[in-house]
Image 1 (cartoon, helix red, strand yellow):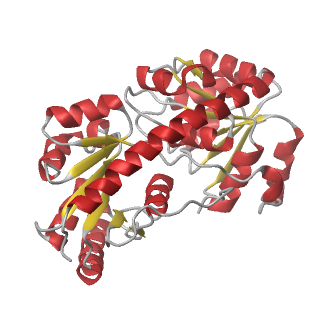
Image 2 (spheres, one colour):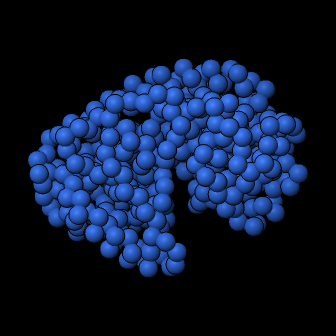
Image 3 (tube, helix red, strand yellow):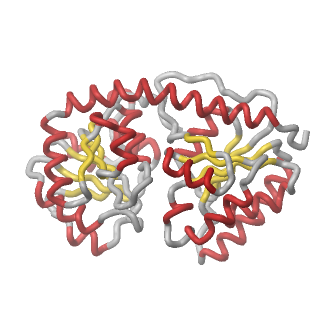
Length: 342
């Protein structure tokens, strides 16, 4: 669970909705479920081929939902298989809310299923999306869309989190660094990011997760750190100490988790120059085309003007929190509209 400065009262009291995610942990799912005050069930299916993991998850989802008897289910999308598993387990008397990540619309693995997802989610069901552009796509296919960004909250400052679990990471505190929490996915400009590491004297790069060997080889070995998959607590330390966050994408209509985390932590942010990101962050972030020289120049500027961009991000956070409360209120209203299976 993210370290919060202050707790808030859950929004759902009397009903029994649940949030289902076919992944071991996802900050967005965890945050929305926690803020609503509902149970989150998150599993990744273990090891092995994808069909085997999906088979395990289908069976586990069926068992969980048949036991839990929820009044409503929120399910992370993609994969569409999770949505179909939920529908099979609860029948048609329980309404479903799909939390539609950008991959539902654009990921080559899943965009074929967009119309099927929205067919399942027609009224009285509902969809959550991260921006107005995706909401328009959902509404054009006859489904209701609620625009809800990743949960915006306040994270603990660095001094409250203690030392790094890995003592080797303490060396990061010796100079400014940019944290790049990416998944090495189809919409991330890996070649450009690797080239950018050669262009920022005095600023180090920290890439989390499991990078491909080819990406590591392209990076400036003297200027990059690859801590691998870290615990949530260790990640929050990396975030708290970072001077800059970088949230890159080559895809329009995409919101990065790292961008929201920069807002929660009040950090300077560099991200891609898309209409959605320009609209959301305005002058609180540096939005640039996903090219190595532009990323590098923006990182150096953010390091030089760190205090200015941190102040702008904190001001923007106040406005976005009100929008969040409005979206959460609509979700609560939707939950309370139905009789469920009580």
